[in-house]
Image (cartoon, rainbow over all chains, first blue to last red; front, side, top):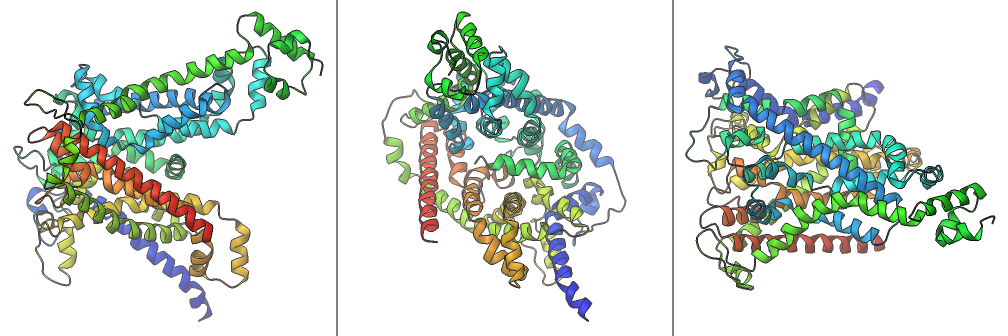
Length: 281
Length: 329
C-alpha cells in the first residue's frame, strides 16, 4: 500500500506527460498515416489509423510535386542566410563586445531595435524596394534581404564575446597583431559552441521561411519547398484544384525531413539553442 | 609606471590604466604600433567600424531603409493603377472608413487573449514535469518538442484535415456525439481553430524557455521547500513560478508578437483570412490591401505603421507594468 502511494505521484506525472506528448505528436502521426493510405481510404469516416492497403507511392508523387529544384533552392537559401548571418553576426558581435569606438552602444541599440519591427509589416515596403532595384523574381531578391536580419546573431555573438576576458585581446595586441587578426586567430576559434547554437536556430528559421519567398518570386524555378507546399495546399489559389489529402500529407512531411533529421539527432542541443537565441529577445 | 613619455603619448589614459601591470616591453610595443601609422587606439576604432560595417550596411539597406520607405508610402496614395501623389495623413484618417480595420484589430486581440494564458500555463506545468529526472522522459520529450520543427505552412497543411467535416477532430468526437461540422468554413468556428493550432505550436516553444529558466532556479531554495514538506505543486506554485516571473513576462511579449504577426503564414495557407474575414488579423489585412484587390499600397503601409505603433505601445506598457509589479510584488 505504501509503495502504491509513493508511486502514485510518479504515475500521475507519466500520465500527464504522455497525454501532452500524444497531443503534440498526433497531427504528425495523423498525416503519416494518411500519407501511407490509398485515395479511397482517406475519405473513410471515422478516420482509420492503419493504412490498408499500405502504399509508399504517395511519397513519389509528393516528391515530384515539390520537385528537386525546390529542395535545391531551399538549400541555397538556407546556406547563404545561415552563413551570411553567422559571419556578419560574429564580426559585429566581436566589435560590439570587445572593441571601443565612438557611438558603439547607440549603433548596437539600433541593430537590436530591429527586433521590434515585425517582418510581415516591413514586407510591403521591402517588396516595393526590391522591385524597384530590379531584384524581383531573382535569387538576389529572394535571399539577400533575409541575410540582413542579423539582430539575433549580432546579439548572441556579442553576449558570448563579452564573456571572453579582455586580457586575451590585449595579449594579442601586444604580440603585434591588429584587432582584426586578434578576431580571426583568437576570438573566432573560441566561438564554436555559439556558432553551433546559432546555426541550428537560423537553419530552422531559414528553411521554414514562407512569406518573403511567396512575395519575392513568381517564377516556379525559384520556388522553395515551403512555397511549393503552400501553393499546393493553400486556400489563396482558387484556380488550382485542391490536391488529394494523402499527397498533401506526404508533401508536408517531406518538406520537414531536413529539419526533422537535425532535431532527432541533436534534440537536447536543439532545445538549448532555441532557449539561448530567445534570451536575446 | 615605467612608461616612457613617448609611449605614453600614443596611448589614451584608459589604456594606460589597463596596462598598469605590464612591463616596459609592452610600452615599446605600443610605440612601434604608432610608428606604423595608426595609434593602438586608432586601430581599434578603425577595426571596430570595419567589422560592424557589413552588418550595419545590410541593416540600413533592407531594414531601416524599407522602414522609412514604408512610412513615406503610408503618406501617399500609391497603387498599381494610378500615379502616386503625396496625401499626408489621409490614409490614417481613412483607416476608420475601412470596414475591416477595426474588425481585424479585434480578431488579433481576441486571438492573443485566447491563446496566451493557456499557452503560458500549460508550458509552465509541462516544463516542471519534463524537468524531472524520470526514466523514459527522453522519448516523451522528443514527441513533445516535435512541433518546433514544423514551418507555418506545414502546420497549416497538417491541421487542415483535422478540422474537416470527416476529419480527425470529428472522429474523436464521434465516440461521444455525432457531429459533422466543417469548422474551417464557418466564421463562428474558424478563429477558434486558428487559436487551437497556434496554441499547439506555441506550447512547446514556451516550454523551451521555461525549461531554460528552471535551470537557473537556485537548488537551495528548492531544497528548503522540500525540507518544509512542500509537494510538487506547492514547489511549482510558491518557489518556481515567482522565480520565473521575468520569463513569463518575456513570453507574454513573444506570444503577442507571434499571435498578432507571426500567425501570418498559417492564416495564408489555412484560411486566407476567411471565412467572411473572421480570421483576418491586422497583419493579414494589410497584406490583402496592399497586394490584392486594388493594390492599395499606401493604405496597406499605413495599416502596417499603425500596427507596429500599437504593438510597440503595448510592449512598452507591459514593461512599465512589470516594473511596477516587481516593485510592489
